[in-house]
Amino acid sequence: MSTHEYSRIVSLNFSPETSGQPMMYNLAKLFDLTFSILQANINPRQEGHLILELSGTPERYQQGVAYLQEHGIKVTPVANQISRNEESCMHCGLCTALCPSKALLVNPETRLVDFDHDKCIACNRCVVVCPVHAMQVEVNQSTW
Ligand code: SF4
Ligand code: SF4
Image 1 (tube, rainbow, N blue to C red):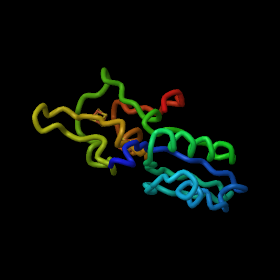
Image 2 (cartoon, protein in one colour):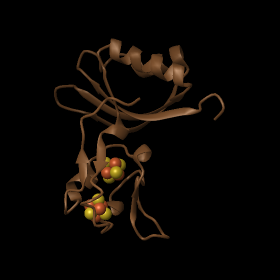
Image 3 (cartoon, rainbow, N blue to C red):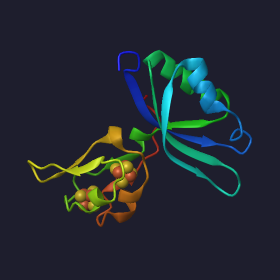
Image 4 (cartoon, helix red, strand yellow):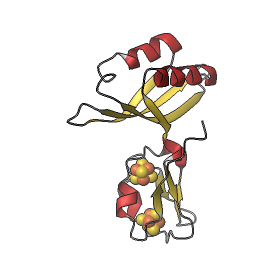
């Protein structure tokens, strides 16, 4: 982890024009970033949506994100997309069974459901399943 101490999960949206370009290859080659794809979708209009974990130095990470944005790719940090209304959550645990990244887990000591933003891949499953609508989608791109 010494050279890759910085890691963030981001969501990328590609237009049909950019989805065919070797952006991921360039990201690794030009900026020495490593990535792992957590989720990938492409819709019938050839617009792509990727969720990936990007790792590298903070400086390289910023440069890589700027590179993607310059090439018309919308980059959103996933940690900003899903939040939990702490007053509404009744800690029923329903969401923990569906969360693919273990961002929502029952704490064995407190028996409360802990939410770890940094592990969330914004799959929206908890948003759909929560009976009291405590899990919410936010549109906030302020924090990198
Ligand atoms: S499903 Fe909703 S109410 Fe239940 S633990 Fe998850 S966030 Fe809380
Ligand atoms: S959106 Fe909800 S279910 Fe999906 S990874 Fe994030 S916390 Fe887990």
